[in-house]
Length: 120
Ligand code: TYC
Figure 1 (cartoon, rainbow, N blue to C red):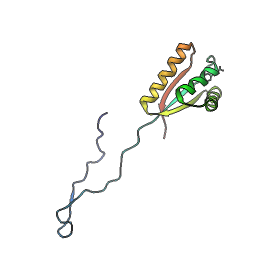
Figure 2: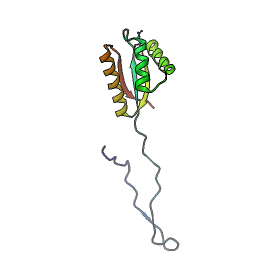
Figure 3: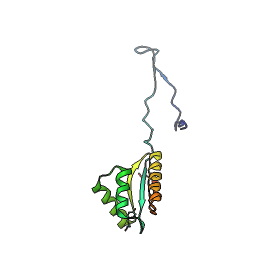
Figure 4: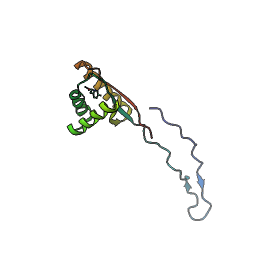
């Protein structure tokens, strides 16, 4: 990844006056401006054909959920049209989407899934 250019260049070092600490150089303290990386949520979409059991298995297998929470997520998707299965870095989220789509395609189900940035 490209190195980020700081918003402001660092201030020039301050040279202390003679006396205690004479000749020493103090860098001005600055508040940290590094932001945490953007995270991505993997969202699964409802459809009328994919069996509920298949969705539950997929959520357990690829998102590390136990049977109970996988079932809750599946029912939320079924009732509300979409649901978040997990939150990851961009690359990991993209891999999860690929894994789900490949498993669905292999099984002949139209299950759809996408990743999107998490809103602050
Ligand atoms: N609506 C599907 C059914 O009634 C179940 C389903 C749930 C499908 C979640 C997709 O992401 C999904 N068989």
